[in-house]
Length: 392
Ligand code: F3S
Image 1 (cartoon, protein in one colour):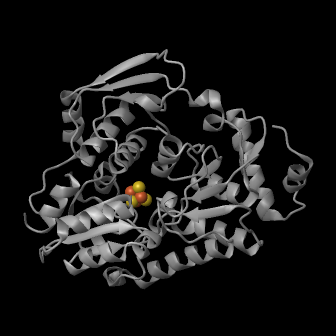
Image 2: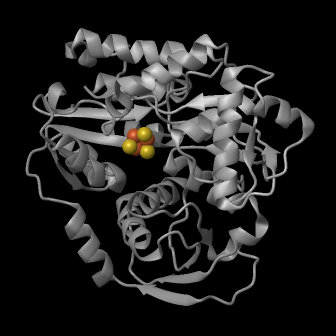
């Protein structure tokens, strides 16, 4: 891979150990995937923040970086942590895990990385059209490529952090126009109604597409909430990082395969995904983290209602979105719900927080919660979730 003189100096350690180890990670990755050079990025989004998922070994690595004076070279944001430190609900967790989580966050902050703790950094600042990014967090990657026309590969935590410290990423994969062409046409014949149905479609497509890019036709709803659920679910069950809506695709229309999706195909995915739960402990909305518009819709459904005493209602969102949606947060919390920031149901300790069963409008949460937290999970639309929380 070609390196500029300055990049060679970083590679040889003239700018310190942290930058050296970072550029070496990027060069290794670039060599592996046939990149010709490094390209500048507008921003990095870093996963590997939740103590529950990264554990102690990663803390040692972060400490070494921070102690070697590592500093972000571009704007860099962070994915959710394991705890909402501002919410009393989490104070029952053991002190040592709360402290470890704080330590991780402090280390990122020392490196000049923004402590956004959200998987929807695009609600805080939208990447420029056509910009190159180095984002981890699969739901944000597919959103950026498909709905914002920003260009990013699906990074892991270490490569996104390395890119943040160097300000560059290897030029391969979805950074190259020829790799952003669609190869499959998906014709949706099933009548999808809610955003949860879009999640089921996403789970199905993720499984059948692998990492191929589809053009999707036949979608009746194209609102952001539905498309966000579709993308997050596609990236959950497969390696999808991008999709096109039919009307937005201007590339060559010679597809290697056409796939029709009817009710029957989706029914099987829905049944595999969801177990029936009569009375969940937790109703979870906000995976990926909610937009202001979603908070508005939830508040509208909740207006004048009361969340049942035997159910928790969590609505996850970033601090930024929470701050800017005061009026809706008030309605949600007055009715007994909690607007949770900085974490989510998948990366926190659900069982320790008293959750054994949950219902969510997010196919991603319903897919991961049983695997990672051994809780029962079922899928319902947002409207239905609110009804369940309030006892219909
Ligand atoms: Fe975000 Fe957690 Fe879902 S990180 S996409 S809310 S699993």
